[in-house]
Length: 157
Image: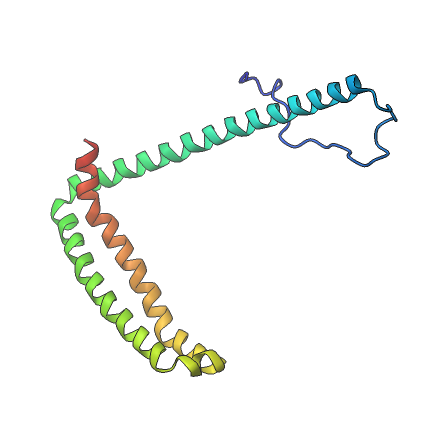
């Protein structure tokens, strides 16, 4: 398909499919065949445009990911000791997260019926464990990304 936007058909078109929309052609198979072929061409054209847009999207996302990986690789080269420390910190926080989750699951399992039946108990559980778990996950994700960049950057080179 041409790259000229003036030649690209619109993605969304409107078809009137109500029974009274077309003049009564009777049982003329040639007219029906022509109409079906035209409709299939329109569908193919729209699908070609959709494929083109998907290719552009994949290219853009790939370029963004590649740029991010390059930036992380540069950061790792500028801070090799910090990258290793981030990896170790992520391992420790992962163990802490596992213990924290063990405590949360014990609490839920011990009070499961009450939590299901009582909105107060559910809110209490979420208020007590939710923010800490969310923040812990966020910190762990950042440390993991910065610590894992050591391996990813070396594999890409």
